[in-house]
Image 1 (cartoon, rainbow, N blue to C red):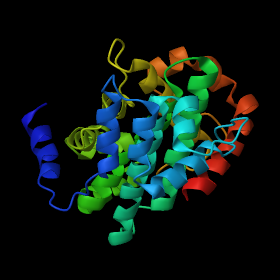
Image 2: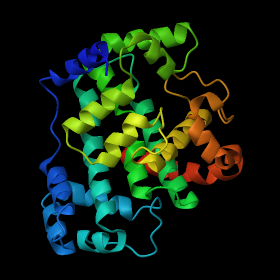
Image 3: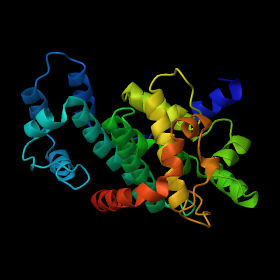
Length: 293
């Protein structure tokens, strides 16, 4: 990391009002690293946060998960879905709540938080779908990585709005996608900013590495599959809906500028055939929007 980039990232380390993750997230992460953890002990910890339990059971019983039998307890969820899936659900719900509340405290007229979350939720749902259908990566890991892949944008817009506005204006004036404008204006881009916060919160490596590399995929790197999945989902969602700058003038047409070359190579069949299968996923995205928003 060059000096200018390091100094830019260091500014985020000086933020005093950075929210803390709920203790349940830390505890669940610790328990899943302990081979002696049981379904019962994990359930008892999660059940101390009834708000999370309520939302988690709502989510796993939704059409999005598509389970045949209704899950009534945290213990049942852990048995049927597995420890790792439960961790990613808790992580998704907790982090979403924290980041969403940031913009209740401070209004930024240049950042449309509803559009931001609609994009992020769409990428999360599609990432999980692609992982399941293509047999690449872990579906639940891909979901949480998709949900939080752009958190660096949110943090930049919230804590350093002047820098964010410079990027937005440069992109619109020069007809650039957001990432290209970032590269020309800022010493570090939103994947690096998001990576900084994920590391600061001590969240799992799959999340940190995928956020960092979802626009610059490195073959052989850790969680390569998750990075390819999220990049592919991001490109398709940007193509089918309004992109982050709301400058997608022909929604529904695939735009190859959104995809990393490794994603295009490995998932070209999925990208090319999206018009045939994507309508199915749109229904899942609508369900997820209704749940989160």
